[in-house]
Amino acid sequence: MVDLRRARWLPVLKSLLIVGLMLPMAAMAQLRIEIVDGVEGAMPIAVAPFAWESSESEPATTVSQIVSDNLRRSGLFDPMAEAQMIDRPTRPPEVNFGTWRLLRVDHLVVGRVVDSPDGFGQEIEYHLLDVHTGRILLSQALPVAPGDFRFASHRVSDAIYEALIGIPGAFATRIAYVVATGLGTGDELFELVVSDADGFNPQTIVRNTQPILSPAWSPDGRKLAYVSFATGRSNIIVQDLFTGQNRVVSSERGINGAPAWSPDGRELAVSLSRGGSPDIWVIDLENGDRARQLTHHWSINTEPAWSPDGRFIYFTSDRAGRPQIHRMDTSGDGIERVTFDGRYNARVSLADNDRFLAVVHSDGDNDFRIAIHDRENERLRVLSDGRLDESPSFAPNGSMVLYAARYQGRGVLSAVSADGRIRQRLVVSEGDVREPAWSPLIR
Amino acid sequence: MKTALRFMALVMLVALLAACARETAPEAPPEPTPPPPPERPVETDRLDPRDFADPRNLDNPDSLLSQRTIYFEFDRSNVRAQYRPVVDAHAAYIRANPTARVILEGHTDERGSREYNLGLGERRGNSVEELLRAAGVSSRQIEVVSFGEERPVCRESNEDCWQRNRRTEIVYTAR
Image (cartoon, rainbow over all chains, first blue to last red; front, side, top):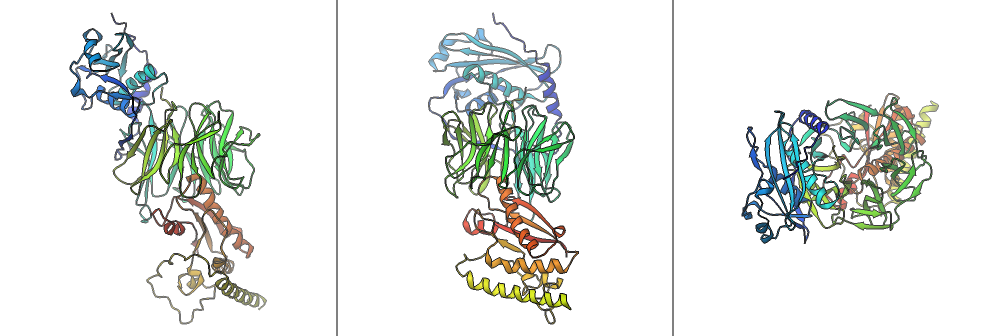
């Protein structure tokens, strides 16, 4: 008999509900994902079509389809096409393991969508099975708030990914990016957009004729800080994604740029040139936005990023002549240079630890690529192959790096696995896409 | 009388500098073509293009004051010699017109990271500002705003285009 672990996820349910209410300013054209490089030896898995046993009408895209697409995109799995399935089991007792072994599948996912026992929305009840041993590796009943079917399917994908890979998945996350149209025509439009990590549900958060850049997620995934030129000068704005409320947190003379949230969400590291040249400052968001200065140097000091433990701030500085990554503690002391490989290393992004730093890297003046600097062995590895790659942003589980690139003369987003083997391109139908920022894990 | 003399001396100095610059910078790379002159015909009969105090010269294609873009070399922010006369002409104008206000917009090409380029663009604005101030312009009349690589005038990924984007634009918010 299957022991069904009923998820007690009321907070999740609540957050899903709020997400459903996220201010629908305007629907953007959606990003389309193209897989550029896949992996040999991806794990064969089958996600059998889930039975629809709810009184509601079935959405056009099924849970099993979304889960299969997610797993394929990760590059680590090779999901079987539905047409090749001989059997369509929806519960463990219906599974004929011999059939699936013949089909050379290692793992099988079966499930059903039923009305929630409490009469509110539905539940996705699913099981992950090891085809070779016949064991059940994971069973869960996941509540789905009305209208949040896709996001719930991403959570199913996350749980399967974690059960088989050993680290949390990053499917139930969001990405922020900027779409620019009409550049150089005098009729420019800049939009800050938030979508699901697979490009679905794009929502325009703010729209302006002046540049928008450097979106940064708060650690709780509720807010975005970004740089806006709406007034004709750079300002740093913090915007609540659920209420739509926004406020200017820095509008000093000169540059107000490169916001980065502290891990506790109370402070914002920024780059301000109010002292004459760009220096790193920290703004106390809970204390009247008071700013304290961390670097005091005539060079350009920008693009701060906090270490996950909140003890250090990494940043770009050209104090040694060309931009390189440096590090200091949060009082601005103990500044040390971190990268030495190549002429140009900038815009650092950290994952869940500060061993791996994703950077914009160049050996000369013409090819700017995404590289990962491994602080443990002091090695830098180039991951991308473009000429104008920039703005790397780690997935919160460290598995992929999202970045901005040029493809056929247009700005596109690309994603590459941290080992460089898997590559995807995210293309929007119109305009240039840039400045991607991957959200934290949304719990 | 004294001021007028001083001003004339300055005009001559600027003209001299311009002449020098033309002679000393023949190896400079070909510059992008300046923007087309304004459609509106400018009264030039009694207008001296070297009268840098006269607001009409801001729209006079024969006057240095109509040039308001300074171009830079890659990863550099020093104002090259051939642009000194343009900067000096504007310094003379702003000094002569205390209500004039300018924004020095610093821009870069698309290469490298956006936030770092904001810093580079500001350096380009700052070096023009320093020259203006050295020529006696009040800092109250100048503001530097860097747009980094966010406002290109040209969209292709080649050196020809990049050099048109590496610039400081002198924008008059009040003449």
